[in-house]
Image (cartoon, rainbow, N blue to C red; front, side, top):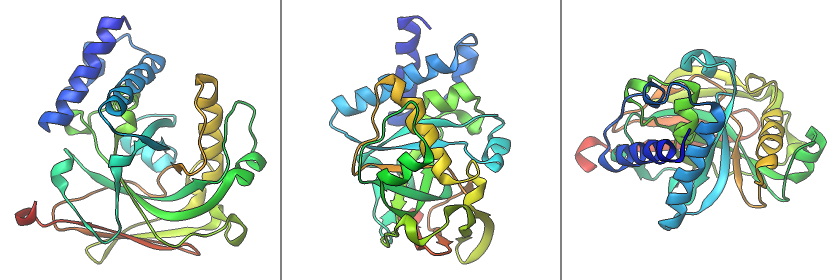
Length: 265
């Protein structure tokens, strides 16, 4: 992509954020753009957010499970940035007005105690760097109309990031086998899906290693205190005003996201 095209793509995404109006797939306008171009768009988008006062507080791996890849019609993971404004407190009402087309996913969140920077990292390096894990719910959102996304679209759109709700019970990696961690997802008391940690690239730790080794050559270090979301254990579920979503993970506890009723938005 030429610089003018990159800036055009960023402007379109920022306009969708500000106006809360989805846009047509970017790939229609930039059909020859590569995934590398998409990450350049994402980096410029995040840079503008930071210049406006936000801060990067972590990263996410998207499309890490076979279920999510099938749902989104792609064949590889991607990554995005988590900023301070995306984090919401558990059991506190979240306005759906912040989003355009929100969906929700249960994930095992890593909180780092030491820096991670690839390439060449192994699972052993990742284990040493993790302070603890938390149950979490990621709110994914797309600025692309009707979620009609290609890999380019979702990468450019910061991996379709929207928000994060973290549970409050920290667990050491010594206390749990993340591959075998089962998950149930309830929306308004009804079971809507189940999953397990192994759905995320065989283990969420593999996603953490993939992320560190992918962003390291770009000069990015996963910092102590940062949150890393490795990918969803189930397919994403739509959320609406008034919904209450609970993810329960064996050995990790539960996490609850509450969305404000429409009349309280």
